[in-house]
Length: 467
Image (cartoon, rainbow, N blue to C red; front, side, top):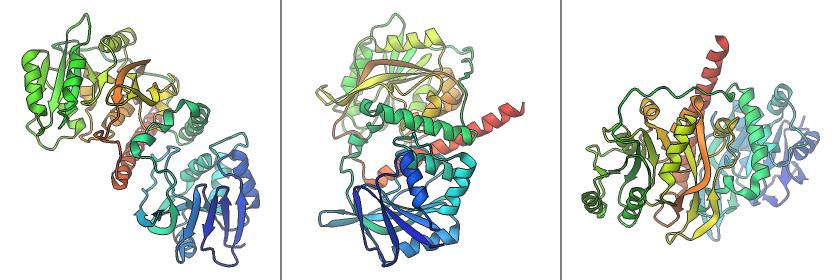
């Protein structure tokens, strides 16, 4: 059997190929039919797949290095770091390691991957062929099945050079997965991810524990919690938005001021002097992230029965937001409630994609699909008694996602699909234009959270079925 065949997807070209290696052009490997056609033409030990996205220049001995590591490790799929060309500038572009929780369909493998025919045959034999009816998720379905039986291995060496494929900043890409124009795509990806979770024993049935009875006293019904550090230009708007809420219950606003040095502290002191409902906390610790600041508020004596999120550079969209959220808790006994928000600029003009309502969430499968997507939405609110049993990770990214996954494993999450919140996009947002190193770290962390949660759900299901 020949060692290697190279398949080049439509819209791509490859340079630096050695003489004598068979190369085929393929329309697409992103559909089920495309994967099936590729399998029929693949007659070698390994297949190097050049994914859609422009010109790829293979590095010196890159093919030999891919095959050597495949032989040495027995990995089912290999991918590598690369160099990225932008005009005359060429920079290193490292990727991140694949792990159990890397089940999102947006995982970045770069533009080149090497597949083992033996590993692919085993995976498809055990877990079924990629269905011809799959429109967009053929390669996604294949790699999920492959990941169960073999390793998906990153080679941390830049083995090729490619051009920039998506030049948008991170803040522009962040909402792609909730774009309503891609609804059919998202439904298909959810179905494929759900089938994968079922295969690995991590899928949860739509059965929920009841929120436990509350045995502690709270000073108010609800607390709006705002962690802040150096947001002098926005914090007053956020606080006034919270204090302006119209309710028939008592509430307060807890701002955890994480050692601001730009005038935020003084602005909060003045606001607190004007309204006693504003609780201005300044933690003694200097090692707190956003999650740690949330913990300072949640575990304090000031926290209400429900803890409701507001970021320091955002505002509520009206005066009924808090009342709507509390009503959802009281009507349905949820452990957590998530609303919807509208993307706006600093002057509150709506920006694309506008309303982010996470319509992909369903009661039956939302907590499973939550392992595929990057977030659950905002504003987020919690039953304080339950949140105090869990706490938030002391990080400044993904802390809310971590606790939402943990809560959804056991309890039901209520949803409000009307816009309750204005998320202001501006250059000062923490995710507006992330450097590659930071974006990689964030993506790897969220994949790690998914890994932890998948392991926990596998354990939960195993214990449940053993009873």
